[in-house]
Image (cartoon, rainbow, N blue to C red):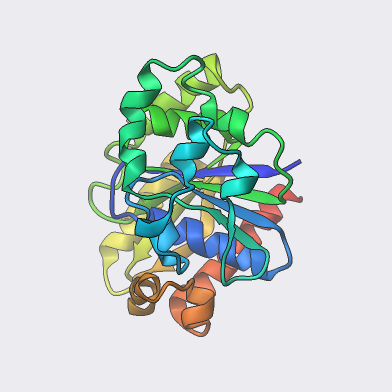
Length: 253
């Protein structure tokens, strides 16, 4: 059975796609079969793994509306064992298109029902609309990246409320895998204060690994590479490698 992990925070710029791409890459490098579903119309996970998102014709949009099966749209990446269902701006119309669809909240779940990967990561859009509801209905685990800044907790209550509604009505198996502190800056006391505040709220759901601010992490997507390929000795690479191990440990204790 696949571990299906939605990577979600409705706030943009918190390291959501960076986390989805790099945890997926490190698990693939460890020998696991991994599928990354780009479910964000920005298509950053697609371009971040070296694909030209503009030229993609078989994407998560076509899979969502049953125009093509998942296996026909999935592509190999330059990381062995890591595959991607690409996305581009065409997915932006999906919210409107889904409104009149039967089973509109579970279209993604139906599309991936027969998959056979060790891990599936869904890179969600920074919003709480129908695309995100589809991701939460399809997933069994939720990974929440949170930037350690003054307003870090703002909006999380809304996200958790939506998760609870999905659990009650659509997917009772959905659980929080963990909350991840991103863009941690050891030079400021604020990062430590915010991390402590997050820990008070989420307890042992907080990952011990913290993702630092790191220039190499920011550069890697523009080269179409995960941080494991771009600069495996950087602080960012070491952090994501450690996080991948922590994810596995939580799932296989």
